[in-house]
Length: 205
Image (cartoon, rainbow, N blue to C red; front, side, top):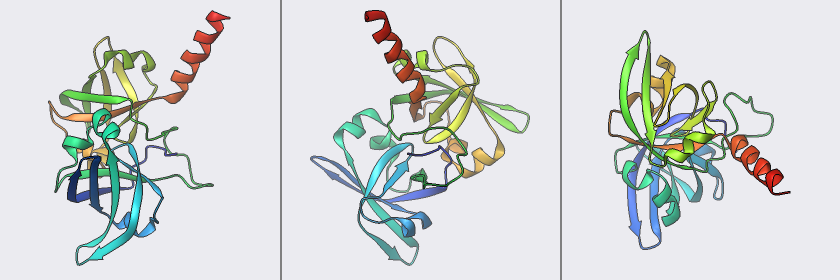
């Protein structure tokens, strides 16, 4: 489980395309805390570290496999090219502060950035899900995960949602670099999905 508080901006240093998926190597100081089998969120997608951490002159790096299912459902197939910066978060440890909200690292779908605009020291980003039906799980002032970042929805309509990004988020995550047309990963609040299923079951009983 994660909380949507990005801990580092890693750099993709290798992409090994295979028939079964893609193997990524990402350079980050967080690699020193990973062991084979540990989970790490990469742009909001929960991946498993495989093999041992490697160290070179530029720092430590880890390897993770991205299966075809993840490539279909997330932006990792296009966004994780060599040289790309990616949001990283280690799995939450027992006793950690819960700074964001419940994030599983299970991406529900992708969305496209429609626009960005300044709002004082913040920046408002409007994004439209590729699957508009995901918006039924989103409410104004509710939580949303965008590329692994826990954010508060500032506005929503039938086609898109908006989030307002503070300077800290703009500096510490890749969301400070997004532009209209870019694709990002979305994970809606899992509590909303559970409530929907429970209510559906009640209607059938």
